[in-house]
Amino acid sequence: MKNKYIISIDLGGTNLRIALVDKDLQIKDRFVLCTPVFTTKQSLISAVVSSINKIISTNHLTKSDVLGIGLGLPGPIDYKNGIVHFFPNIPGWKNVLLKDNLETKLGIKVFVDNDAKVMTLAESRIGAARGAKHVVCVTLGTGVGGGLILDGKLFRASTNATGELGHIPINETGPKCNCGGIACLEAYIGNKRILQQAEKIFKKKITLEQLSALARKGNLNAIKIWKDVGRILGVALSGVVNLLSPDCIVIGGGVANAGKVLFDQVRETILERAMSVQAKHVKIYKAALGKDAGLIGAAILVREGV
Image 1 (cartoon, rainbow, N blue to C red):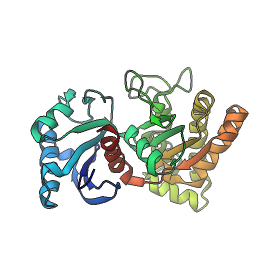
Image 2: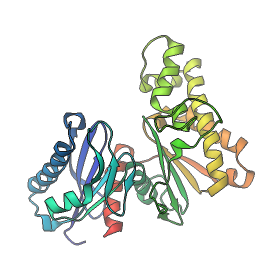
Image 3: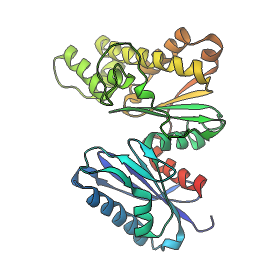
Image 4: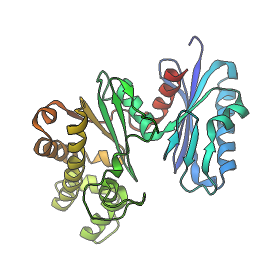
């Protein structure tokens, strides 16, 4: 990898984040675009291509200096063939051959995967779960996603549709999830649901950051909301712990910023609900890499894929 760089892209519903990453996974340059301004499939792909060309030229590189391009995106993705089946808020985005499209336009090797899996790679290689062989990662935000590291390798299965922790049903009946399922974990602890509960109690609009700040100041209503989230998450993770007996669970995303009140409740619930041997073995960590996890993970996707 002498004199080789990786271009990482974290493509979400809000921002398109791009970075130039060196062989030691250090971010050397970066910039951000606002995703919602791209209203068509072609305009978004064109923005990705122009962003890649821009970061190459502004750093006085040529395409031969680039080992590969890694992208993390939300939703179901065929990793092997680089097909993005769906992308939120972009009309006409269905089963897009993103890998082939970008490789044809750029002449650089491209790797595409689900953003939660990309975050899982980052946290397991250089983040909170570094050194662990069996890892479960959970991302808590608008949706609830996840990824699995088993025997040190990212687990994909035949469909690459692994790690969908947000769509574990936790009740026989309950609210309908965006996926069409009933009583999915995400329907109980996604951002929207948490804020709905908070607004009922506080009788006004409130952000997750404000709710977390209130809990840290000792507000009993805010503490109860976060404990309820931790308990529900802990119940779902207890089943995962019983099934996989991971060394650790890494929790990231905006909801994880609730901090101690959330994590203590998750740990307590797992100790109560999971089988004793597995429950005592597993460690619960907050994700260490923050917003850079997607960019670093995309670089690892390339480094381990070439």
